[in-house]
Amino acid sequence: MFGKLLKYEWKATGHTLVPLYLVVLAVSIVNSLMIHLGGSGSSPELGRFMDSGLGEVIQLIGFMVYFGVIMALMVLTVVVIVQRFYKGVVGDEGYLVLTAPVELWEIPLAKCLIGLVFGVFSMIAAAASIIILMSPAAFVQMIREVDWILFFERLNLYVPQWALYAGEFSLLLILAGAAEIYHVYLAVMLGQLSNTHKVALSFLWYVVINIVLSVLSYIFLSGFNLNSLALIFSELGGHAAVWASIGICALQILIFAGGTQYLMAKRMNM
Image 1 (cartoon, rainbow, N blue to C red):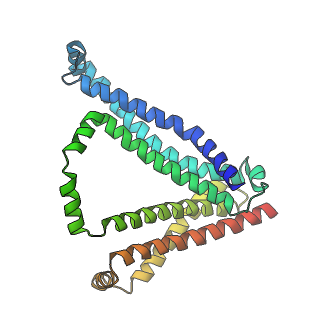
Image 2: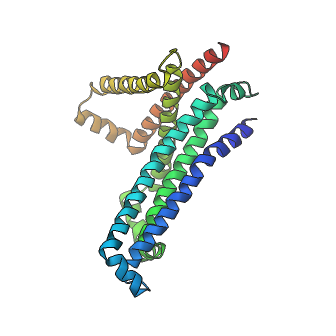
Image 3: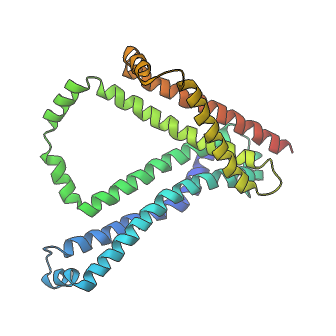
């Protein structure tokens, strides 16, 4: 049943974000064409038009639309992740989702996993749009010009365990993203404790939780100075420092997920 829940979230989230990805790529292609037509394009007439005053205005509008679409991509990705939880737990879909034959903790987990996947997709779409702007042929040529043997030789020399570090940082980024998503989920559920202004109070709770985390971090770090922290990290090693951050993110996930599940159970009992 958990697989069906993932499939449902996949379709519901993709229904909103996939068309936006296509819009981003389409706008990037149009802008790329205008950039190359403005240079030494295959058509001299089009090239002269794009280099004219009107052509420059069209290119400026195109770039404004591009940056607007990229901003919309980032904002809408966050909004959709929050909206999927809100609608699926406290909104119109809440009754259907909460009465499904799944464990209560699986509901926010499914939404969090799909949110992380589409967050990665959004970054890939943004990166692909940049490659399209600079011309895929130019990007491939740039990749070919790099001396990869020399690059990896120097990387192995200066960072001997770079592959392990890359894996650890990837895990850290995933857990940090999951912690942030569960942070939002907990804030949404805390906002539901009020009878009025639930959305505003959810945002307020999000800020309050951030402040609490910042205060706890300050209290913990206040007993150390920069020299002592540098000494601790040098003694523990880089891997230990990364794993400490991973542990903190995992602890945050457990706390936020536990609080979210408790409030979801309380709401369902009501």
